[in-house]
Length: 409
Image 1 (cartoon, rainbow, N blue to C red):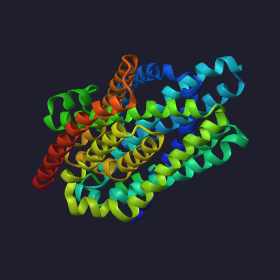
Image 2 (image 1 turned 135 degrees about the horizontal axis):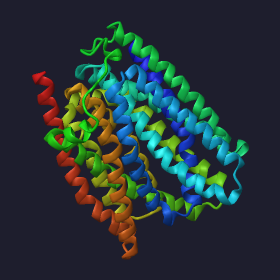
Image 3 (image 1 turned 45 degrees about the horizontal axis):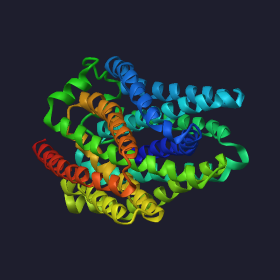
């Protein structure tokens, strides 16, 4: 129970920190011109490729007790730097600072959340994950609600840039929770097979994440599952940015709008996690649960193709994101409970960052290309339907493989 409590606090602080700055990031993207967003995704992918080797080097040489707090402190320093830049730069130069902030926020989110779930799969067993990952996700969702509320209420009276300080303080509090959880694991109080391993150096080679992901059919399947997910998500994100740009002209209003959408997603996610997530995974198993979000996407894109209205789009976007956070993400993390410890950090980190952003890149430029050729929203949705069907089949196969590996272990 103590380990569960500190895990929830860790995730709460992490996601509340992120959701305070996420609407500001979205506003920076719109302020820089929606036509430039695909280029921001390209810059993000390049940044991911550049950041992965230094992180892999940290994982190779240091224990998780060391490299996770160091990574958090690095991002706290970055937040304070952006606070200074966006506070004192002339207005004309703030557009470029905002674009850099957009790229940085994408890197920050994937790194810290990937570190979190790597930590969880290292601390808890596969059987514990089925019982507890949904509830741990509840802690993160509640943090997302708090962060979204903070921004939606304070963005206009305080200016969004001043909220970066609150985000930095919450990230430091998450680091405190990491240290307490490491202490419980070191004393063998989590029940995991890797108890006491917080001081153990993970070791291996710098490029082990890439090499292992390329050699393992199981990890390659996770790569494909992740890429198909991100292609659909990026398509919907670009459509959301275009809607906000068309409907709202004021920066503070757009930021508050993005925060309200995030709030709706997190409230729905919270209710699902409290009442359904654990029951769904236990009743359906990993294989079937992994197919639920792809099935929802087939229905959603089909509805969007038939009725391309703002109402249908918003409903689909909220349901899809809530389904990802409440059900698909915790279940997807269970896939890593049956892989070797080095792969929990290196291969998983490579998939969660580099492969994820490659999917973003494909989705962003494919959407731009379709729009350049005159594709309507309905036509874009029709293209996404067969991709969602392939995503469903891959999820089914991965879930069966995870269940076999867990039974063998």
